[in-house]
Length: 142
Image (cartoon, rainbow, N blue to C red; front, side):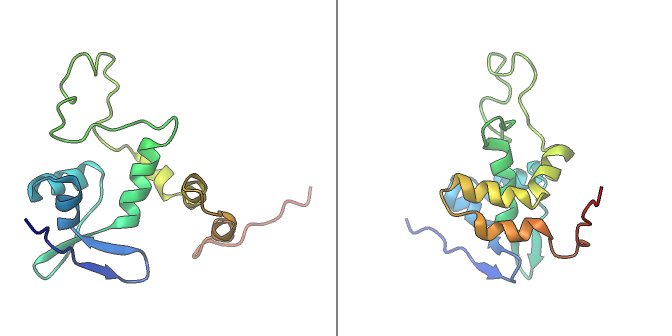
């Protein structure tokens, strides 16, 4: 069985991956792949007959959910979702909250991701000091 080749687009703001990427990597159906994106609050981009998502957005959200002291996550269709032993305290996260989205959107998360991957984060620090589109930080003269 040959896996379907995933279409990718690079528009300069991260790789856009076809939804079939999730199907191939996670071994799920197309419908389930869309449910995963919905649960993670990632909006697909439809171009022609294809649906794409931003791979870096997925990586950032998954990193925030799975890093040390992260919230963890129970994906739709997971057997643990309704397991009373696993979810005895009712804290099993099944939806991405606004707080998680804010953490994933913070430019500093890229430095943390690079540090955890063993890469030198010094290159990324320049992006967190003054992100594009934000006014320069004012120095406090007190």
